Amino acid sequence: MQGYSPRLRRVSSFQGLLACLSIIGALMTPMGASGAQEGPRGKRYSNPLTIEIPTGGLVEICADPSVIHGQQRGDDYWYMFCTKDPLNDADRDASGALKFHNIPIFKSIDLVSWTYVGDVFSEVPSWGDPTSGLWAPEIQYSEGQYYLYYVMIDPVAEVSGEADCHFEPAIGVATSPSPTGPWIDRVTDSQPPRPVIELRRAGPGCNFYWTLDPEVITAGDGQKYIYYGSYFGGIEVRRLYPDGLAAMADTALPVAIPNRYENADVVQHDGYYYLFASATNCCNGPLTGYSVFAGRSQSPIGPFVDREGVSLLESRVGGTPVISLNGNRWVGPGHNTVFTDFSGQDWTIYHAIDRNDPYLSDPDPLRINKRHALLDPLDWIEGWPTVRGGKWASDRPQAGPAAQVGEESGYRTRLPLERQPGRPIERLSDEFDTLTLKPQWSWVREPGAGSYRLTGESFEFNTQAADLFVDSNDASVLTEVAPLGNYVVEARVRLDVPPEGCCFNYAQAGLVIYGDDDRFVKLTHVSLWETRQTEFAKELIPSLPDYPRYGNTVLGPPDEWTYLRIVKEGLHDARYTAYTSRDGVVWIRGGTWTHDLGPTPRIGLVSMGGSGFMASFDYLHVSRLRYALAPRPSQ
Image (cartoon, rainbow, N blue to C red):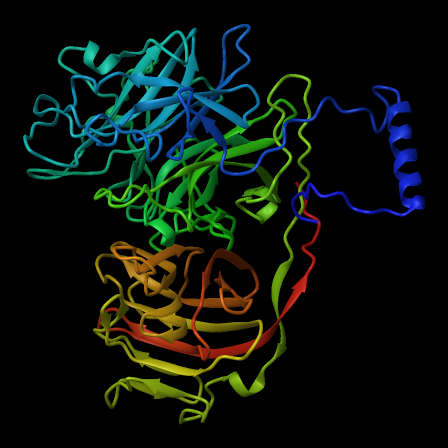
């Protein structure tokens, strides 16, 4: 049974007797023997984490969390630092304007119940503008003091070299003998101000790479490294000087290709360095598809490759999913931090959005996402990290971590059922082995003559300078009726965009489960800047004005031929889960969108986003869904 119900369950007298005998047997087991007693259990919890404000209310935004246990003798607390934001909807000044906290600080004794204890800075350090963002804190401890690395958005012209720019990030650092301060900003302390990572130019004027999301580790040889960067410019790593206050610019190396990842979090485990990184839009309200992926390397500077051996630097970009959408209320799980509790269990805290309550209240023109802090266990299955055994974000009561010495976590790994193709539905499947379309197919906006053909071996469909995106609904869709009930649809697709290079933006081909032009889910191989990715998108007619209509997540790397699979479960608010494969044998599960596609959804094929290329569909298979137990993992 997943989760925990507070209601009592009836048991037979015999079951009750067995339970009593089991408890007595446990109490009589001597300490140190097989089946030895565990220490006290950690506290149970439910997501989101409860964060109290001493003056009243709960914190509803704790984005980009970074966590550390108190390092000084006698400090048993855990501390969490988050990006500059209001604490909740009521956090306003006398004029009604939202208050923005310059890196809020929270503390907890049990990792479950937290309290707001103040901000790192009372005002923005002087090397930034008064309204500058202070983002993505990274907390470290070294040689008797705490180091807090952070992103400064819009430094003053003295640092940036430009006036009146609006997005020019650099990385600073502050130090303190205590996690609650007082904090001394070390960039302001130096004259002239010297960021840890300076602004990185991409071109003249206000054109800077996104120097975001610092992550600092100490390697096995004692060398400190700092990782930084985001979509524009990719993720890099540099060596830090021993004092931790500046990085060696000439040691910079890329570790992830631009336009795929941000927020590096690096964990050392079983002889590898694992690079966790987040992908897609962090802040798209109820359609946020933000997700975390991993690659690993035996060196802190890479190259980092995923479970299939695909590098995070390749154009057909690698990355093994760690957490993505799972169909419950939490969307956009990302920007995570990893730590180990006192029983040896790994955990991750990350932010996510409740799709039923995504924003601070209207009519707030900023449309600020409520990025709550969530906690879940991190498992290592066959050498790869996954949250909660692959079940991902929890939304029911869970066994909590061992937050103090002598405690034991009650968490035990339970794997989700595997979703697999079952009995084929022959009347809806097609090997594309004829020279004309079979009768089950019909077009939404049939394309012009010569733009598609059947060769007897495949269905070839030229990419169109057309799309299915918000109000741009001019792409052709080849459709057939979708079966009732649960099903699996799968296709093998080749998109002949060059495997490397820029830019063939938005050229794509793949599968659509289509209600109409404004209600669908779509799984395609797509070309984005210098990358080739697999995108799983959702479009809808929003229930409220100004809410987003289109959201996307991404999953496994494509190949010359890419296998795409969508699993549909449920009825009206059905769950659609995406899978990809490079060989048709090893499948990578991605996110789950929930959607109501109306009474007569159809299965469709698309080839669109830009002209000049061709998609080849080798087959389309439709089958019933079957469930299978996942094999017992080797840790």
